[in-house]
Image (cartoon, rainbow, N blue to C red; front, top):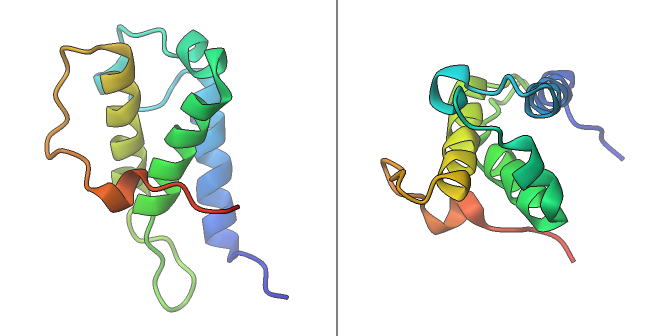
Length: 102
């Protein structure tokens, strides 16, 4: 069984840290206390991680090529969830918000 490449595991670990620490995309989320919203329902936090991992790209060597883009798209999802007046640009494609698994 293969493990996720180290770079992918690191990207997910840092993303989780930034979300939990309240420091994800500070410019986009600086005035939004998003943590209570994410903890109100497991499905909300689940979608944040789905967007991040769906957008995350890895090259043939297992190196992450767009960690900042993946974090930003997840931050846009959080912002839109917490602030109904915010419009995501560009709008999310279906594959970005798709939930995988059983």
